[in-house]
Length: 274
Image (cartoon, rainbow, N blue to C red; front, side):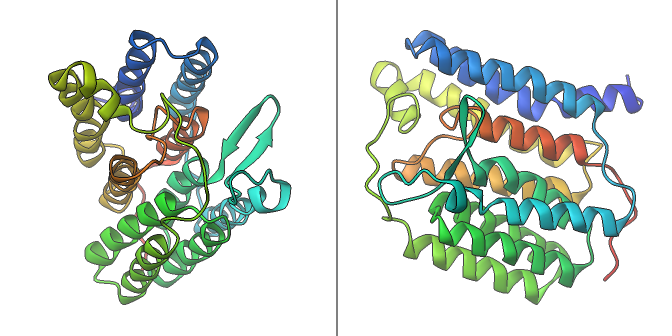
């Protein structure tokens, strides 16, 4: 089976599979019902957007949207709150959303369809905002995504952004005094306490499966799928190494909606100019 409609449904899988695995973990280990409901509602809304969303037609429009998203990364610094010495969240009705995992996926997908120097400048603007928060996990993920674009395009500008983001991630790694939260940080270690093989299966569903799907999705150009996969790997790797939230589980709605925004906006367009 093939065709645009089928490909759109297939594009929901890199989001739906890890989020459903996360919901199963939350339910099985007795997480608060509110967290389960928020993640489930975000997944439902995200699937609708992936099926219905479209990328802006013109490069100027895509650039404007990317700049707005990069500037919106500053909302936590402007609106607060400050928690444990960091400002990574902003209020959105009854929820608090973390700006990095919400907006970075869309920024990365849009950057992959812009001209190379403009793309690097957009990613640099995003990195500057994340440094102010500071958010080492998001900076590391941005650094990996920029590195993938540097390798794909042989772009020195993206390589420079990548090195800067990774360096800033290391410099801000210990920023803040946040207390670790169950069902948010240390998810794989939590599961491994009960069953190592279940932790292995969860890791595969959270990372390996969606990464493979992102790399092989027919609706994603390489300049979109590869850095988006790198973004997920970066967020997950930092969460495994340190007390940072696990993507598509612990952040709540933010990364679920963020990856949905990116997948829904992705389209196969003409290669970006050099």
